[in-house]
Structure formats: C-alpha cells, structure tokens
Length: 134
Length: 134
Image (spheres, one colour):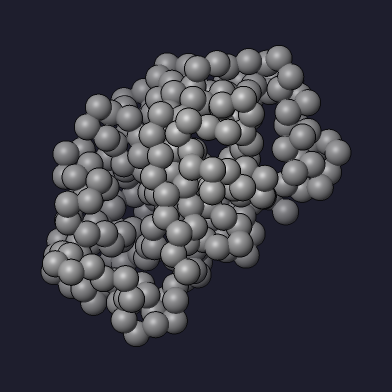
C-alpha cells in the first residue's frame, strides 16, 4: 500500500515491469536508464552497484523519477517522482537475487562483477501520474 | 546517421521502440514518461502537445535524456542525453500521424484532443550509453 500510488497500479510491482529511472547528473541534466524494481513498506526499491553513474548521482541529489510500464500493455504506465530516503548495502545481495528471480526466474543474479558492492535505493513516492490507454 | 549514436543501435528507431523521456521540472527534479520517437537528419524527434508538463519543462530547460529499448529484447537499450535545439509546430500534425502509423499501424493518430496544438521536439544527441545483454 502507498499513500501516493493508486491501488489499481500496484500490480505493476508484481509483474516483470521495467522501471525507467531518472537521476540528475552533476550539472543538473537528467539521466535515464531501465532498472528492475519492487515495492516494500512504502518505498519503491531499486538495486544498483556502488560507484556507478546512477549511484553517484543519487548520493549528490536524491531527487529521482521512475516510469513503470505494464509488460502486457505499453500504454499502461505509472510515473512516480520522489526522493531516495535511504541507501543501504544491508540486504542488497539478497535483494538483487530476489529481483533476478522475479525478472529472470533465476535463483541468483547472473551478472555480478568482481568487487561490485550492491546497494538498495529506497524511494519515497511524492507525486504520481498514470495513464491507461486501450 | 548520427555522430553520437552507434550505427548498430540505429535500428531502434525503425522498430516500435518506446523512448522514456526525461525532462526537468521547475525545481530541477527529473520527470520521465514514455513517448514515441523517430530519428531524422541528426535529431531524435519526439512529438507532444503545447502546454503539457513536458512541453513547459523543455521550454524552460532544454536538457533532456531518453532511454530507448528494443521491443524484442528489453535488455538491449540505448541512452541518449542531449539538448532540444528546436521546437516546432511545423509538420507536427503530419509527424504524429507518421508515428501512429509506425507504432499502431493507423493512418491517423487516434488520441487528438480538442484544441490541442502538436509540437515536434528536435533533440541533438550529445552523449550516449548502451547495453545489450542476452
């Protein structure tokens, strides 16, 4: 349950829905890439690795946006704007494995790099828009 | 052809590839929504309507980003960061019809609103990243 996201769009977090995740570059430009996501205890959660562009961006400016589309209908989507309230390594390895299970059906995330430190970003939704055509 | 976008990713503009388009809100936060796009004469082109959030954002700050994913493989995508160098109503009605043809197979864009003024944003690519897994 979320105060911000309509209940009728919460199913997107159960599906293999990609989120397109926008962060801010050092000069304030937007950056956007596809990510896996889920929802837990009021937060949209995204998992990345320490030291990546996205990670550096969020640590500098935690204001982010995501567009999450229904894999069964690209014309049904949810946009969430919010703030990353917590960045944690705690449980991040388990979390990326859980996302690999959800998206790929694998028990273990297959794309780990040597020395990579996984991180969970907990995004507090502050504003949403949605669309459902067809 | 593009100076910035690798040739082996230009096929994305021929496919029914959605772009997730990030712009900047008045306070500098990112905003991101899915859009149709194409590529012509060095520009990624997106079509929207005057007065929408995205339109207001771009007129205030033309720095944008897009992530364009392959409809046949969500793990193959291109990210483009760039600047909207031109905003024009000229040809915008024809352009939205051409996009409706490409994405929906329809001769005419079916979702026009009363009084809507269509606009083309011409985005000059300045930086790209890409990924192709699996």
